Image (cartoon, rainbow over all chains, first blue to last red):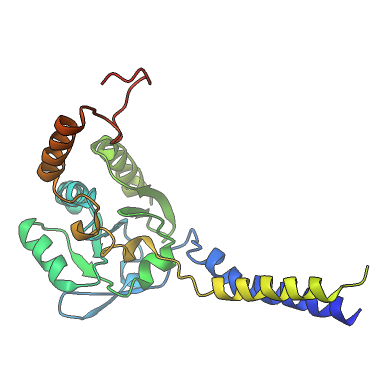
Length: 167
Length: 76
């Protein structure tokens, strides 16, 4: 009988050890309270964008579709910034020099922030690169785009227009 | 049902395996920079692969076997 109890305990212990791997990356519909960094290390809390329509894009220099999505999202930023859209391109490169090389090769106007430790994508539940989130004025994540192809440009514009028109 | 010594040993081994598996790290999508590096590819140089494939096909009098899609008739 004692053996059975030991066996049960062992099985429970194994489940406890393995469980964290399954639960990592859970996401919520409300914008996580994360802090990003500017190029000089100045902290930028995401809470500072409350009340605004925000497009936050997670990218990295080594990610092939990001080479296309980065200029496309910058074009969206230039098109909609006068109407109040905020865009944050959050770089997730572990080595800053790779991000800097990419940025110097891709002229842009949208703000680029950094999160080399990856706390923000974990909080957002990012499952692939690139992933972008469209957040409405109440701070709710309304639309998510994983990966990128030119076909989704029209959908981005439609969703942004919808969120900007909401009060 | 009572647990025999063999069963207990097997369970202990299973538990030890499960504990060891707990050490496996989950690589997040944004942590794949090094894995995405060209140096991590089996064949990073397309031109070299094309040359070597051509060279091999010419000497072995056969072609394909490198992911070439066909209907299975053996023709390219």
